[in-house]
Length: 616
Ligand code: F6R
Image 1 (cartoon, helix red, strand yellow):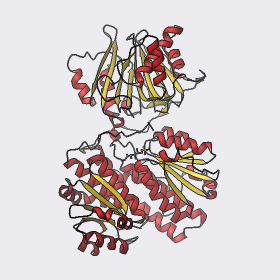
Image 2 (cartoon, rainbow, N blue to C red; image 1 turned 180 degrees about the vertical axis):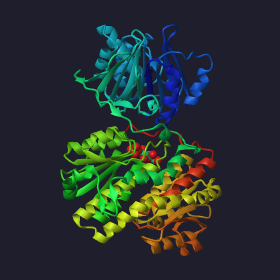
Image 3 (cartoon, rainbow, N blue to C red; image 1 turned 90 degrees about the vertical axis):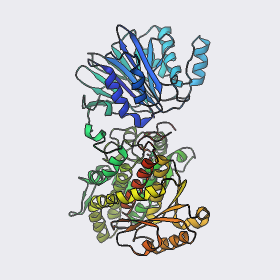
Image 4 (cartoon, protein in one colour; image 1 turned 45 degrees about the horizontal axis):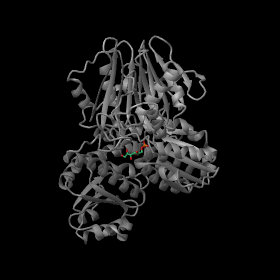
């Protein structure tokens, strides 16, 4: 959580930092701040509770924005409520050091106590202000330069951080470091950029260095970058990566919100996901990470999937698919539960970690635990070069492109696409999937983008239904089999962006409790495609109908039986049961989107959430 940006070079820093912060607002948006330096005025700080636009508005009231070096921060509060004082950057007591920080300093309390004893005064409730004063204390005591002081201080710290520190005494330098929170450095001509991801500097340079955990960088004007290990001071050869991202991908492209743009991108990004990996005509489905480790997958006694939120829902869909296609037992775990419950992990387990951002702290911790216990860990990530993609033994990227709307949409369908391809590959290799079924699924998966595009034609219908139910206080989502996780995902989407209470349930389980909630005011969204347990779900719909629930059914085109019972139907194209989540999820995304818009909610940045959950 939190986004950080830094610039040092020949341009004005302010517009770069502000634009960068706007691009990173998905990481947190409860307060924002910027520090600039110029020789005449020295350090200048402007910060405020609220979003980056509020910061810009505040800066217009007399904040001088000149300076070629600057750092900025957009916050997702952990220590201390969101207010002006707790916003970053934070200054040290002398006013000479300024810091921005993404992460948590876990041992901040004893450090703070010690610093207070030495006469330090704290103005905010943040752990970050403790860190900047600790750096200052080290610097004074040892009479050393900023880089060394940061290194010594960080060796006393327990927790997670991506930081950038500035020292007025040496204004041609920024020091950056990371442990557990991401940090990219953009390398331009006579200029450097620092950011939580590469989006703030994409139009200036396509050369980026992703710091590894436990590394720090001395970034000095007109000097080569020095990267070293925080622990033992050893120098690291910087590995400069060419960025794959382009500017268009991180802009709204005419859509009102990133979420809608990302919903509409699904046909093309699903294609990107399987491009070069799937060829139905030739009967090929392969991914390098799977091929290189095929034996491990084939010998697995069990697959354990760890993930959070929407990625966890994709994992649940994968459970059905792996068990069906490859006949390997699958367990799907919330990463946050798995890591703390002393799980039984065997050497012949394959652990699959799913994460859009590749930075989720709980998923990362679950991976480390699985590795410590000898399991082979495979990552399914979207963000290239992310921490999880590097921590896992092998993996497959989803290639969905940047997902900026906080509510996950295209990440979900592309994760399912990758997982389906793995299951198909294993089913074929194990012989648990017949040749005919294998080829049929390959063909169907290849044309799924067209069906997703067709499902997007439910847009107007979703809008109409949204208008009818936008004021409902509660909502129930029901699905069976492959579409039970889709019911969970539909409910999560509605909750997080429209703040309507919603529950997802396996349709048959409704009788064991939730049915008590049903009356004429309760909208019940039932996912009822023709394949799967159609007759069973029709009975469930009857049960809702007899209790006067308002039925909104997602059905296969041409369906007549459910149409007679439902208040509203949304028709989607036909596909196989196993692939249906890729289609059924589309109208549910649209429905949540329009309900949230009609309720006046901030769709792309819902309250209390952040895109990348780097705290546990
Ligand atoms: C929901 C959503 C979250 C994420 C979860 C995991 O729309 O976005 O529930 O799915 O925080 O994030 P990743 O996939 O980045 O690990």
